[in-house]
Image (cartoon, rainbow, N blue to C red):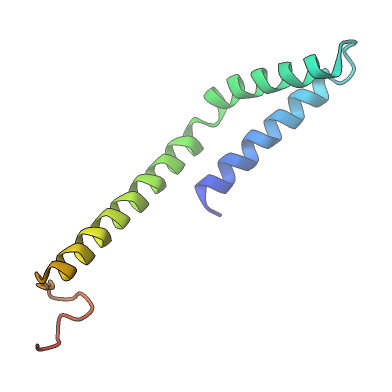
Length: 94
């Protein structure tokens, strides 16, 4: 399971748990939802730190892969089609 899915499900689970804890408190429904949102966000900051860091790492790796692919495509379009050994197209001869 990806880190983003785990973190998102963790955030939703915390929200539902806090909302369930506040369910029997006598107050306006909108206020109850807002309190559950604030409390679950605060709890997730501390309780889900590992999953958040893991998700940020995955996102940084994906951004770096996209950046490298973008640079490779730009250089290919500019005519600087120098491929590194082991890359697709490295064994073709022009």
